[in-house]
Length: 226
Image (cartoon, rainbow, N blue to C red; front, top):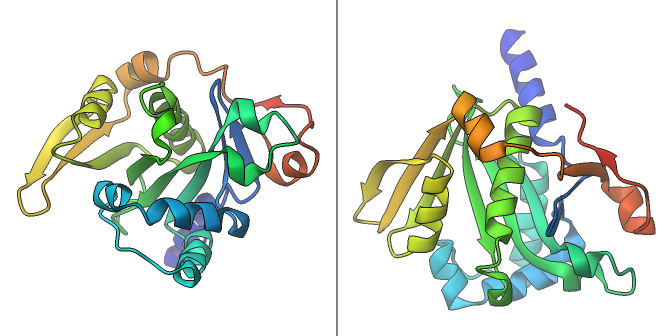
């Protein structure tokens, strides 16, 4: 009974974002839906992104299967990153507002407080503009306060110096280096220093129901309730 309860709790936590929209200063995070797949597939046809994400090219049909898998996966929480300024204009289709994605997924069945974090800014125009930093803060904050995550890890290509530097500013420290995969694993444990210096004032982060927001694009925002 205890194992079943733990499994159900984990399932509930990782599917908690099914109808969640998170708004920051520059970005809006929304659940990864089937409508997003064609644009996402277009991104992942890029050899550059395949290398950065260590991904194999998929057909469009396989991409739809992957999206369904992610939505149903008990151990994964995925958001699509939208350009907030574009998304605020109802005349612009949501797919045209997409700039990347962010994922949290559990890596140790025996430790649901440990999660791996992945962030991809797929559109080159949006890189170097602070979106990755904002998304990282938002997703980590959401992971801590909504999913009970207390330890984060990231795997980054050794040649991706910008991302490595960004995560080190967020108190991540080197855990290991894989010469085979040419990547470094960084990790951080949530503590008072992280809460103060990385999260700081998170009043800019707001939450609303995605379904209603998508339909109206004009629903009032409400502060994230912890």
